[in-house]
Length: 261
Image (cartoon, rainbow, N blue to C red; front, top):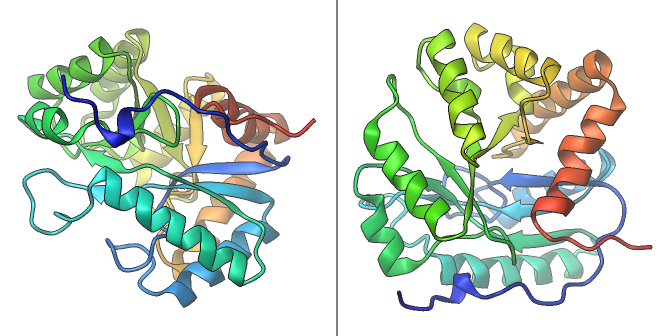
């Protein structure tokens, strides 16, 4: 298998100061349906800092076989993340950024992975993935198997939002988690804005401690308030330790981020 820039072994990283870390965001301006301009990105990052966040993974949409986000390849995302770091520094914002991607799973995605490599989060072996289906397809298992068999850890983004029957989805997520797939819930789902089923499932999975991460899945500044409202609801209903576990300790553990001592 060819070696790709995103498949490097972990290297020494600078310590990350205490605070929350968002593993799913669309902060790079103009590359997908997230922030459209650098001004929107700077405004969003300022709000994140006010809310206690110290860093985000930049995870633009990656849709193999689609022209819409055809340029969102791992080397380009890494380059754009470096550029955005410089923009934040010039704006006087002390905020960490790491490259990644939100890989859309579809039938035959393994061919794209063989060609371009897995869009890992930072220096980790974790890969953020999503899919939109009304029934769990066999090709999804094949795609996840491709990653698992090569030592990657798939993180399934916002599974509570899938359009699968709630009980069938609940069983499927138990199965996926038992075989090594990690689950990332969206804070916004707590507010009901993603529908009744998503709101019901996110609370059930939080109560049963079946989620591995919670993320904001930030897009543009006009959506940040509802996502932070969801964070506040989790803290109020499940306690600050849940917030710390799912947005501080888990990212540092799974994504290999050294903490300041």
